[in-house]
Length: 244
Image 1 (tube, one colour):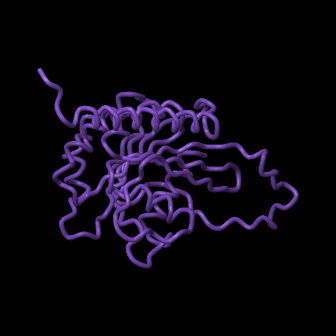
Image 2: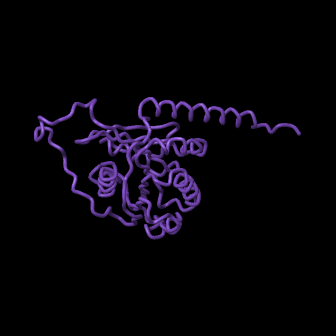
Image 3: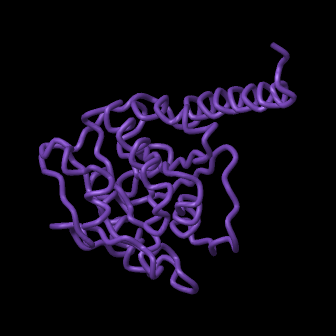
């Protein structure tokens, strides 16, 4: 049987994706990776629009504790992996946290994006890996290297929700102890599914109730909102709580 005309192109693209996945993994190991040493203890799965029992977070003034301020190189590091299908809002989330304006239009991430955010006691490294089909294969390779997983879902993308559910549960099965923050993004769109609907459609009822799984509604950085958007603030506060 003669090979299909596109077979060579498919093989080339597959090879390119494999090389890219290997490069991402090497960079992660070199720059971020150190093996996960911390776990979030206690708690149950929680669904809602705001995290429960979270402490207030304000801007830290270094002058208040000048004598105790640790040197930058002495700060401990926490790793957060940001995954989700392409178009779910991962890159926008990182840009908003970094104080950058969202990009106009949908520009898929072919590779990865990262940002490092200092806090009073530690630095938070966030790594986003592209959500295209060729890159999803490599997601599971990074799960055991991080402290928290953020999984972004486009609440208005009903057609691809089964794919999001499938990928999410692969990650949940890969590391049963990893805390997971599921962000129901784009809640400002009229066609967006509610948190209750997404809980059902993502199959979260089947998740062990002893596991730390959080579902937060958000509209990350609609025009002009930036980091002051409540959804972004709630996610950041929850991440700080889980990483502390």
